[in-house]
Length: 328
Ligand code: SF4
Image 1: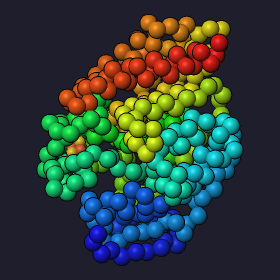
Image 2: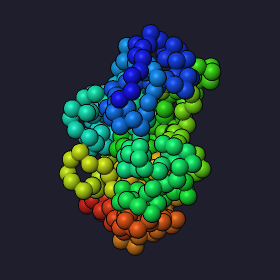
Image 3: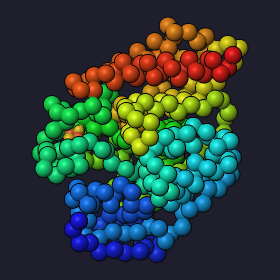
Image 4: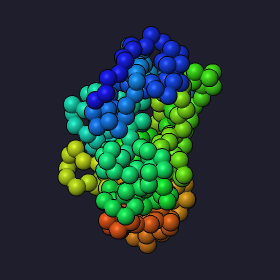
């Protein structure tokens, strides 16, 4: 690890101003960043610790939703009584990720900003456009089992590795951002992460000088919540495919079908056309296939990850079938 300066920030604005400097990185729980620093993938000259800023509460909003501070740990969110009661998909997704020790340290804002676990990205001897723009993408013709099948580009086929954000996408949460430029804003979770395009080093919409301050959940809407994560072992593994779903039936047809997918793209994948196929229709295998056809219409495998195309179809089927069974 290279030497670096360490600053405990005293206000959100001070943290935002520090982070506008390219050589400074913001640290919260540090569960991903410190690993990347040890590997010399990240070599900041300075860390700006936002731990002292509070942002550790979960509060009810005027609209009836929940506002989760950026420094709330994943454990605190997953065990919050209101989250478990009204947003179980979020609790399930968080508990499907990492280990208890990591969840005790990992924060809401940090989890959103975690970086891909692509082997080439974390190995500084390998080509990687995300880590070193213009150096090439080792994964496209290489080790790509974990990699994306949707929304890829010639520059990068990495996946966003998290679980929490997939549930937030299904829930249509919002990310609050304070900026040193005075352009504070609220970004839908569904638009927070980016596709790689020709700028794969940008994982999300944060600009220098931006600090995540909270994530807001909309008022609870009921329905049955599911988070199904398919992975190579039952704990401490990233998703090959995951599905976050909020499903409701009325008079035998889908009246709600909010679905988001992990492990398939550079961002949690949300496609409103999948809901459109399901809503108002009676569930059966043919309908599930039509929904999967929409999800996978532009899917492309890269050899080692070809299996994800069928796995995503089967996982979507399994979640929808479970919802039908539970509603019977
Ligand atoms: Fe780097 Fe993306 Fe290629 Fe992985 S997939 S080597 S992160 S450019």
